[in-house]
Length: 521
Ligand SMILES: [Ca+2]
Ligand SMILES: [Ca+2]
Image (cartoon, rainbow, N blue to C red; front, side, top):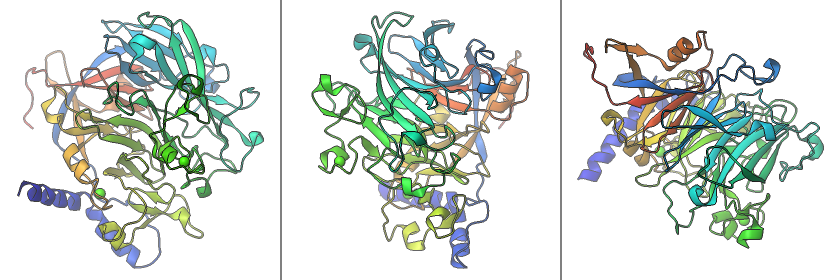
């Protein structure tokens, strides 16, 4: 009985969330015209969820570190992408302009490693560029290993890419995506000293560094002895073959294939094959024998691939309770997606965007067009080869989805929810975790509803002041901001850290601090 009622609940919620799909189908049935606008008609609204946001720390001002014409947001105070906590109590934060900081127990930052200084070809003039991401090996305390991602220009660059998209040559290469392993001689030191080794260098051939490699992650639910303990996951990128500009963009032929890194989340053993004794990958790392596309015995399916069909799955996370893996995939002109990631699955790009067919797959069609799926596919009575999102919103509501986390921390109202947001607008969203997992059912039209969170701060008198994330940034910088550049990180104790590439602040969501004169809801 309990299962039945849960499923019914899901059905009604899903109907609510994708109520627009019905009209979308009707529209499609009238002809082969693309959906003109507002593909998901129900807006994301606030339903009474109000959460306090509080300042934690600010990184140093690096506004003048790069020449203004080489800096995507010269007015930005500092450009934070990630906060990573170590079990030993230390907190690390990157400024994409090139610094990795360590914060002491009072949250005072000091430079741990000058990453920018060792990569002279790094570029800083794109939204995701420079020193993009980092993560620590789960055994960092003993082995001192951590990993960084950065972007470089190809011009005058002597380094040789390990991978160039099929059909292109070195002469076509515009940018490099580089994953580096750093080895700290003394893992306990608060200033890096040691060596580094390049793991992987992947070529862009489109005009801009659009959708660079962004995330590197170790599955935090894996323990020593587990099959994927110590395996490194990357973000999934189409390497700009959608809208990266120049003659090689708008190129669906580079996607939906397994003989390439394009569009794939990779899972690699970062150890050099000279150490592991295993199979060498494209770069100086080992192919995990457990990977599905390694175990298939087919050399035309790259053994590094964990899942594929992503456009810009720039953030991955895991539910620490049940190990569900999530990827946030930024859409083209229309749909932002949260996906539950299964090994070997195909998430559709460029044939699908959200639960729609992308126009570029049709003769004369375009990348910014959506067409409704046929009713039998949408309802799940006939299966296609794709795995569809479990939550989504469209570009009337935002422009680019952040990463997010399954939340089980100290804020009762957020427990059991997946907390995420929109990078550009800075809106904070939640979806119910149980409903998202139910929506991972092979049926495109079942998705979890998305709800917006109202943020507030406390004034000195303890009164609630309702704010948007962007207002906080603008107040801190003293200027208007056209973008929030919101990103989420998770602290060691499971709380959420909100950062921006605009104001250099780390903020956190907190359980209501009480205060006075809290207005009724
Ligand atoms: Ca294979
Ligand atoms: Ca579904």
